[in-house]
Each structure stands twice: as C-alpha cells, then as structure tokens.
Image (cartoon, rainbow, N blue to C red; front, side):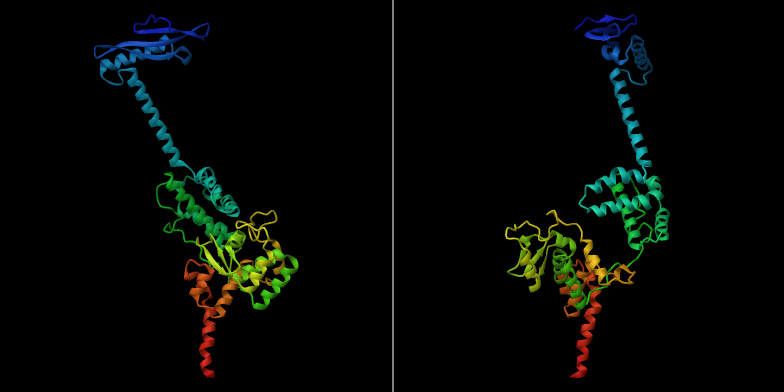
Length: 397
C-alpha cells in the first residue's frame, strides 16, 4: 500500500492505487481527519474514479466541522452516510406508497393478477375468457383508472354497456366476478384498502338469471340420438351412452381411468368431480357391455377410458355430437339456450328419467353428485307428477 499524501487543505489526505489509473495518473483514495469530542477521527471518502476530489472532500469536512460547532446535523461521516441512507429509504418508501396509491386497475390485472391466473388450475378456455372480458368490457371503463377511485357507478357502466350490446346476464355476472376477484387480489397484496365495489355488499346488484337447463330427452329421442351417433362415431356414441345412463359430466368422462371401472361389480368411481368429492356411478348392462367391448387387452389402471385421438386427455366434446343433434332437428326453432339440446342434456335427461320413475330427490342428489339439494329441486315437478298419478289411483280402487 502506498504512503498517505497530505493535500493543501488541512485534514485531507490521499494514497495512490498501486496499478489502477485515473486519467494519466494513478487513482487516488481520499480520507478526512478531524476531531470529535476531543478525539481525532479518520474516515475514508472514496476514490477519484468515483468522483472524489480534494475540493469535494474539503466541502464535506467543512460541513461536519460546522455541524459540530452548531450542534446540528451529522457530526461524523458515518452519521452523514446513515442519515443519507435513511433519507433515501424514506424517499423510496414514499415513492412506492405513491405508486401503490395511484396504481390502476389495468396495471394490477395485466402485471399481477392475470399472470397468476395463467399459471392456475383453471381450464384454458376460462383463462382466455377472463382476458377477453377484460379487454372488451372492463378495460375501456376502469382499466386506466386508479383502483382506489373506482366506484359502483363505474361497474354499473360496464353492466349497461354489456346489456346494450346484448350480452347474456350470465356473461355480465361473470365480468363483475372478475372485477371482484381483482379487488380481492389487490386487498390481499396491500394494493387497495377499502370496500370492494364488486363484492356482495358493494352496492352493484348482480344480474339475476336462471341458467338451469330444463330440456331433457324423451326415451324415443334418446334412442334416435344414440342410433345416429352409432352411425357416425363409435367413440362419441360410447361417451353419450355412458353419460345418458350414469349422469356423468363430459369432464368426468374425459378423466375416467380403467382403474376406476369395476365391471364385475358394475360400478365406476368418478374422482375429483365438480363438487370436489368422489362419486360412484352404477352401470347398466348396456353400459357394462360397451365398456367391456372398448377395453384394450393391455389397458393399465391409469389408462384413459375415453382418450383423445393423440392418446391424451380430451378437453371438449366433438362438434359431431351437435351436428347429429341438429340433423335430428332437436333444436329447430329453439332460441332459449336452456331449451337447446347439448351433451350436458344427457346428464339432465338421466336425472329427469330418475324423477319420472319415482326416485326421491335425495337419492337423485346423491347419484348426480349435487353439493346441495337445492340443485336437485329442479326435478321436483317431475317427481310430483308421479306422486299425483299414484294418489289418483285411489279413485280407481
């Protein structure tokens, strides 16, 4: 290490770096020396390559001496640096709080909330649907507005825009649900403090609608549908037959594995259903025969019963199903989607047939895997007709 060299200004000295250059000369490391409470103190400032000069060093030394004389401000370089660090931290915190205070709904959605949704367990269509609703309806109204400034009147505007464009009440409700979820996310991550305007008590009434399907197939319609499907696709026929006589949802059919099928006992266990519980379904002779016929000799327990064309899991019912439905004119002249026949109508038909055959609602609830008897009560009018017929038999007694 080189020797210390005194500068012209008293209390300032430097030493030269052994190899590092600054301009044509060697780099200089500056220090200051002064007395604090009668004791001599020496503190390093930094290198010339970092911007230090004798003049800057003299200014710092002069400031510290003045502070010592007046009894105000930092008296040492260490205190000065600690104060500067504290000031910088406070300023950074202030700027962060200011940014959080003015963060927009759009910034939260696009930079934080939606990236998290993309890595969630939601299905691909659901993720795309959230992005679509945000882009078309949410962003134009509140995307650029600070989240703290969003009020119920802004959400009413979203509702009005969607309603004017002819969007279904279910879509409007879904859109408001996204807004609610973003507010919940913001609250949880300290980006928003206050009442969620899209929450249950937020002051924005959600559109009311009855989305339950009421259309079910007659025995003859079901027979005609299966017959046509059998001509077009054995795969879709098998899935339709399974749903019609077990009440299984399309997603439950796609997830079904051979290890969950017991043909000897005539029962299949549907796992991870919509209700979150495993549900047994009982197989008719026709369904058992179908499963026995399609089961490969080398099937493993983890093999899918209804795999896609590439051998992987299917994600949606083939459009061919709807084409067959349309060819049978089941949806001819029907505008109400609740009355239109879809693949889900097979599950609804299963429950409706149970009700018309006199099965009580509790047993239907268990067979359908409903989380609440309220969901099953839509079939109560069918059960009542059976009870009425039974009661009227007395007049023939």
